[in-house]
Length: 207
Image (cartoon, rainbow, N blue to C red; front, top):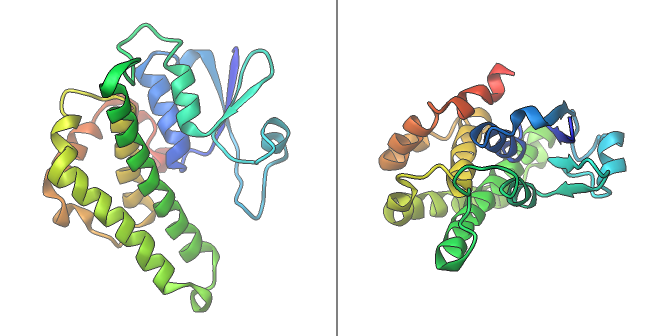
């Protein structure tokens, strides 16, 4: 094994990286090291590799460590022989990266909702802040539903992986939000995307 990926299977950011490893046939080249941590309980191995303590983190063969899922995905995209997960040049590159960034912004909000509702006592939860996170996700889902969904067809690249992992995380951790009824076209897209072997292999509830 030349690389080690520190990740948590339930994390949508970590899942993105593992999905890409499956999609690009790099999965056998990376050791998957599962770490259990929260902002209140950091993991020493992760901190030693990445001072911020954030996961996923990818330790390379030379001992250097990459962190932030988009940085890791961009690096992995240089290692495989398949169609690039993000175009290398031109306007299409910036468009796909922007869609990937939008998916990540939703994911960050969903994770914050999870932390606020799971880790903080109910009487101390900040409803207005939670509502704002929910609204950010809803606006972005509506954008994909009404505007960007045709751009996802025929691809399963970095933007699609990020969106699919976000929707899976909503089902897992924000299960009281029945988003499919509000975004039926997006739900249909996700139903198909979720059947990909890479998505099936990385289902958090199955790990």
